[in-house]
Length: 533
Image 1 (cartoon, rainbow, N blue to C red):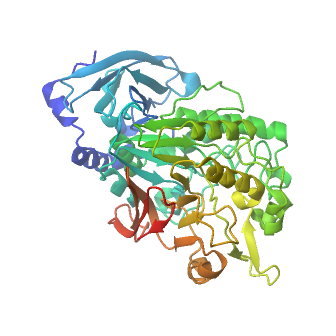
Image 2: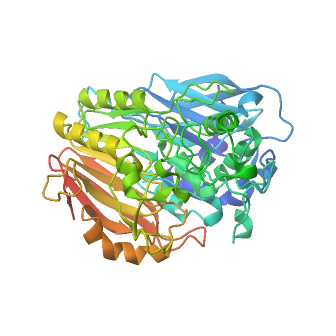
């Protein structure tokens, strides 16, 4: 049992105001300098903060990681869950062991909780008490939830700028946050901000991470950011990875198309790299998964129900995908390559079947597919500037796997899946689209809506913002809203009759704190798959 003096209890009260103020005060202490992921400085044993995730009606994952120079032995960790912020009504508590082979990470599956309820949690180890987190369980599928509020985030390149969007996110009134990938980036140090240079990997010059220590250090660096810590402490998160948690544009066990020479990894080599990446990801995320250390496989596709209001299907479109077609540099090339990719898959057969079973038997009003890359067909002006071809496709997105996309959208229409919504990220810009079984026939009724969230900090080439806004009405008429100029997140409020999505953005990522404002607001009425302002 964790026992603290009254004054300490009051100091740990995690109202949203206290969470933000405490994280801001800890900014200097909690930040780990580049290459120093195993030091704690003045931040104590918990410099990476706390987090919760994968909420079920009666359970939630509680996470932290112990970090201290020279710590090698197993450490007993106590944990508590309480109904109140002062921990006067503790409802669950226990002990677990943080082990060196998992970087002294802690994953507690706290069970026996009440559905749809707010809780507070904390840890103690080696005489030190962690920061306090706030979490919330999902509403039971046997009950009819009236509303769900959640945020959508992705793509947070540490080197590209600061994360004021996370301060804004932490101050929202949300039930859960969904992260769609690119939680870390694998690139070598090189930032215009002196305090945002990446950790140095074991083999500099490859512009990628290779070893387990490489990935652990990079995750610890990202987790040290106070704004990210505040957002994790405020809400439970549901996370999935994209490519940069391992390596840019990888597909299954196939290396990035542009890697040659020293950067190239044959499948057996890449399997070892992927095993390291997946283990480090698990060690740093509040995720319910069955890790086998050293294995290149880790299942993270999973499903969450929020009453009978919303079913969230979370996909992994990296681990099981076939190679991007065409072999084009950067995977930008002729759309015909994706159209001809009849055997191509982003999900793999097993995951695709799992997804369809979950949609077939869903009791939910809204059926959501949270995944990484845009499903909308998008025609881009050639980013290389070459006159031929003038229009290209991003073959790393669903455009590279057009036959599978056509099958899936036809399935949604034929099975009359209730209010399908697709969530995406990856492209560092905001796109709201109406999806049709045939994108060349705008007269067809849309079968789903897609919300693609901009990045937290990763760059979108501003030179393409204005041209895309100009050509989208002609080349991509199903795109109802696009903006590539701002960073931020999406805020969704879902009721039985209407889904509202707000685009929440900051004007700059050159400073740690900046105001968050609403750039645009769109809605979908249940039963329509049509976007309206």
